[in-house]
Amino acid sequence: MQNNTTNKVDFQNQLTETLSHYYEELIETLPRLGLGLIIIILGFLIAGMISRFATRRARARTNDPLMSRFLGRSIRFLLIVAVIVLGLRVAGFGDISAGIFATAGASAVILGFAFKDIGQNFIAGIILSFNRPFNVNDTVEIGSNFGKVKSLEFRYTKLKTFDGKDVYIPNSDVITQPVTNYTEDGFFRWDFLVGLDYEDDINLAKETIMRSINEDPKVVSDEEHSSYVMEDELATSTVNLKVMFWVDTVDYGRVASETKGRVIGNVKRALMAEGFYLPADIQEIKLYGRETNIPLSLNDLKKSTND
Image 1 (cartoon, rainbow, N blue to C red):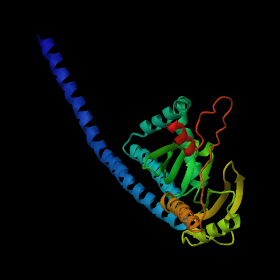
Image 2: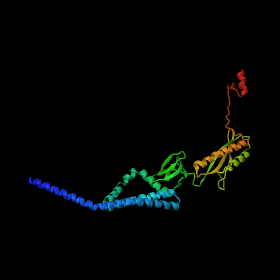
Image 3: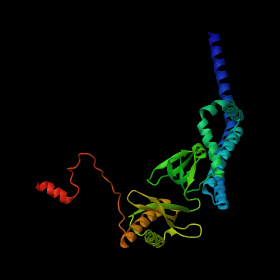
Image 4: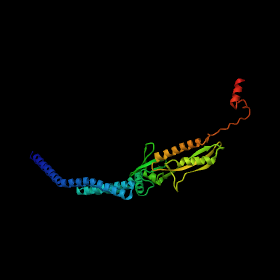
């Protein structure tokens, strides 16, 4: 009985000593935990401030919002990683941070295969941030996607199509696929065909078309960008003229397209005012053998009806 009482007292003493020991360690650790937590919180805030400052400075120096935004986000990411490691060390968890990096290094190969596409897109994003064929609001065609560039993220490039769709293209595809930039130099050449009757005066038609084009204020005309009309084809029923003119592509989706439609309409009205017929395609029907009862004119049709 006495042994049981003694064992019970010893257990209580050991439990009390253990709890007291942990309590003392907790009291000693709390300041370090609090300091580590404060460092991490302040680090996040400071990283955001430095990121915004770097973004503004880069945009002011380079006038390149895509690169400046990407650079600011990269700086913020690196600062946050450094602050987390520092906070863990101050809080007394240096072994944990070292273990995290050791585990990350040991599993780099596995993660590399598992997240190969993410890594490719991230590296492609870094390349595009410093060397790319477009800027914000440029009208581009990447593969089968056509629209305006809206942003460059770590993994993708965002396009806004002219019918309102948001397209997210992986950066690795932007690197490997042909990119057509319609607004890099600000000019684009439209063209369309005009069919004339074989008996029409081609020179007069060309003069009429050029006069109509030059009257449009949105058509660009300078030493490097001149409009012209040329004979393109002797078709079955028409002589086709090819009309070519330049437009400003800063607002490709509306101004450039509206200019093309307006020029086509003005050319049509100007030609018709000059008496040009603008014929449609004529289909020729040949009859062979016994198809002799088909009426070839209205008179023939009336005769066949009376008979």
